[in-house]
Each structure stands twice: as structure tokens, then as C-alpha cells.
Picture: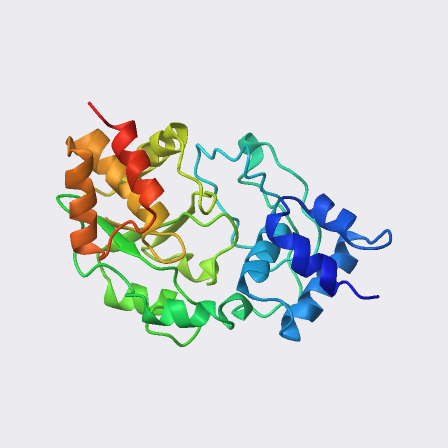
Length: 278
């Protein structure tokens, strides 16, 4: 069976595992589809964008046309980062429940082993100081293993960070179990890459960080998406505007001065300006 052509043609725009199944010849089970995808990844036949999509498929389905997370999603520590069974669509009220069962042999760092690894390598790890008058730190996603920007390194080198808010819409590139029974609390706040955050999502994020600071007023909160620029910047800038009365331009400049070059997507910056225009 040759699945290479439909994968390379369609998978980047597919939204659900059901659509992936329809794109392949024959009546394949989700497990068979995943095995085919993983085989192609291991053979180097699928690039980063397809691997990125597979991670979403493996964990839970994301409908980019309607995704509007307004609550933090607690990813249970017993759920492996690369499960092997198909997910079912969960109501947001149940988003804290495991989407899949644990297991599988998918390499934990596989998604970073193609061209994305180079981009991750040259991106600064974390802002050297807190941003503006807040206790936010913006960072790229941690990478599990023997790295300078791993969970263990962060806990050792950043003693003031007590919360990590993960904005990725799929499991992160590090084991969250390492934070259990430590000072650091890991929080999943799932968002969709490339989509301007909705106001509901911003409000949910602000409520979340307020709760964090209410419990630990002096704690620093590290926020990350993939590289700590676009989604991370939009959420932090929105907090600066809504809570601290920055103008949109002041917020953008403040974030960029701490995390150069700041928000990269021009349409993100324009959306921020338009949303908070007076």
C-alpha cells in the first residue's frame, strides 16, 4: 500500500483523525493509520509540519474553525506524551480528562529531529528578566533530555519560576511528570497555532494567571508556545493592556525589548492594535 501521496498532499490541512482516515485507501483503523504515519516519520518521509500534525491527531482532535479554549487544560501526568490509541472529541468541560491511554514507541523527541531542531537551537531559551512590571517570563518550549533548556535545567537555574503555562495545542516536547512534587506547577492552556487568540481565550488566560499569583504573589510564570514569540507574546501583551493599562504599542515594545524581535506575525500585532484601539 502506498500512502505517501495522499499524506504529502492532504495531511497538512486535515483537522481530525476521521479526515485522515478518509484520505487513505481502504478502511483503516486509527491504530493502523498511526502506525503508517510513524513508519513514514522514522523513515524520514514526513517533514516537520506533518509530524506536528500527527502529534495533534495522536492526542486529541482540534477543529481549527471552532477552537476557542477558555479554560486551562490540566494534562494528567499519567498520560504518555505520545499515546497510541485514537482520541475522541471531548467537550471543553471535560478537557482535563485523559484523551488517550498511555503507551507507544514513538520517539519523544522525533518532532524536533528534522528542520525544526535547527530553529529551536538558534532561538533564545527564555527572557533573562521578567517582562515589564509583571512576573512573566517568555520562553521557547522546553526539550526533554540532556539539554540546557530542559525541565530539570529550568528548575535548577530559574528558582523563581513556580508556574509553567504551556500554550501548545498538543502534548509538549518534555515530560511533565518531572514537575510532580516540585515547586513548579505545569498548566496546559491549549491554543491553536497561527490563530489569533479570541477574547474569551485571553480572559481565561488572565483569570488563570491571577489565580496563580493569588496563591503565590512572588512567583514567576513562564509562558511558552513553540518558540515564545507569537502566541506567547499575544497573551502577555493582552495582559499588559487589560490589566496594567499599557497601550497596545507600549505592550508590543515592552515584550519585544525582553523577547526580541517580539511578536513576529504582523497580523497578530495588527489584531492586538485593533482589539484594544480606543
